[in-house]
Length: 313
View 1 (tube, helix red, strand yellow):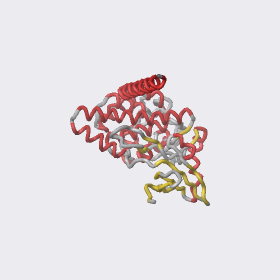
View 2 (cartoon, helix red, strand yellow):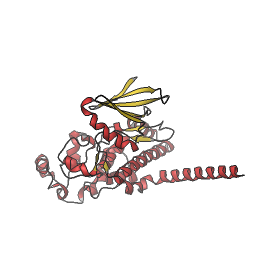
View 3 (tube, one colour):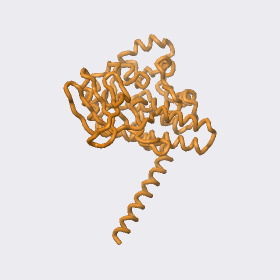
């Protein structure tokens, strides 16, 4: 048994399960935070929950053991591919990134349909189920801070929602929010896949994000924000969207037009206009992966059909 992860509320152990005859990950919620385990159980549709039980004042959650690969490992792979100048490697890296995007969007689509907000999407909460060099299978984990959409009003002025570097502007400004805050966080994760580092460090977030007064002037923290920026406020409603792709190109150091476009839509300042998971799943950035995925599925279906016909004979 060994510790493989820990946070403010829990520790995660790697343990051999004699009943299942396999090594598993066991999350143990600290005594004072056992109630947070409930959301992890609710969120188990995205990371498979094998078992859950309570001993004394501690909650134990049993999950499959993931690989040691995380987003940081993928980012290293991605940057090496770009530096190689090899068009095949570069193309393969972009396809893998689109596959990562696709799987995370499917997870967010499921949450949106079920009116649930993850509220803590960051690179540490995305784990690969296998070696991503071969194929991409990942899980969105840690639903300890998640909430039903109906509970969101309880947190409108609560800075505990989302990690600061992945926090949507409506949360920062103390405005009503919904599941679209997860799309903003996903954009931050995808940017980190490309750069290898947090793209919106707390120190320069305000210099990058000039929030439109049209949207945020009635927010809880608008006056504080206005004092910080003085005359640098954006009063033109359309200006941030027009500038975003150009600013992202400079920030990320990549020029993939379709990637910058889907990212700019995730970083839409107006939460009501921000791209939804289902809309993003139809974006051209995912077109090549969708084509390969469809071809693979068709081939798989044909093979199964041939096998059935052979058995019928």
